Length: 460
View (cartoon, rainbow, N blue to C red):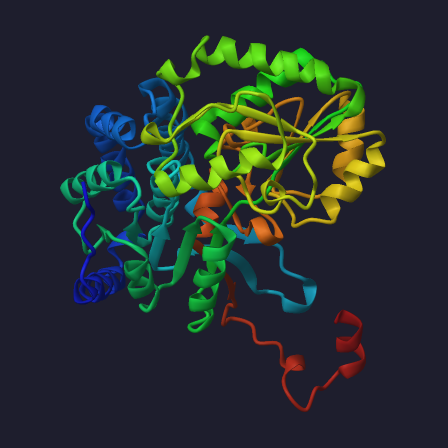
């Protein structure tokens, strides 16, 4: 299946229609927002099987993994917003200092307006529709841009959105990077982008021309540390799961492993056993092991296999875009596999002796989206205090994204802004300060020529 580019004039017409619709004020009403959240909820139920089939066709993603990592997360987000929307929308009282009496102060949330949401291919349902929940909840309109690299999923989402919403409220634009360029030439009130840091810079540069606020959910090389105090069997199991989930095509997948030299050999053996428990004797036959999204991704990731000594896995089948979960040892920090985010099931290992080596290694590089530590909890907290990342887990991987009550987002090169739960609502909202001053009393001391200045000065 080939995705056709949405024409430029069509994009301009959609943006114009959505801006006009937003100006009617309809989306600001709580009942309208709740109704649209319910409609998205019902659409997900209706289209669930079709979306799962599309995910299988494009990525070889099993129904179980599709539900667990895509559909259930969006459904949970919708439920959370429906439950809390009334409270989030309610104006908040703010204390007023004595110098402003008898005025009252409030903070009012209002929708930013027209939003553009651009998503990647690796979690094409979750990473497009989860931000959409925030946009609907906050009272915005939305132009959605799915990835052309997963055509079956993208077309299914377009059909679902077209059936569920009027395009003057929510619409889908399809196509390659030329369409991204055309979309970014239009003016929005917020741009929400999930993708690579290189594309994030392009989005931010385009947004700067109109001073449009952006949320950038990017990626990077997320380190995974296995310390001397780690339970190696548990560490290998959870790292193997995190690295083989979606075949490593996860922005928060463990990207490289820093392992205490005394634990390396044991980890190699436990990793092999963990992969067998997860995917069977022949990973290639596992219905739960995803394929590389396309030949270009396959070639890039497969090329990393020469950057170290293969100590586990290493098999590839280009016709199937299959790469076996692979451990590399004797990896040099300057090698290609250590320069860019891997985004595949290859895990390079570098040994260390002291914790300070780990801190130095991580801090010399760009700030990662995730950070994983395996070892005693108190040592994990100590190393977290000396490093930074978008999110982190101690003795686990990936799971910080599963709690919708936690913020999800990057820092520095791995992104800006956070979302999930209340933060998704906040991302698409503006918080407006309002002071209400009665007319029954008009104190003269604030007016020129500033009488009673001695007393006023004390109040300020």
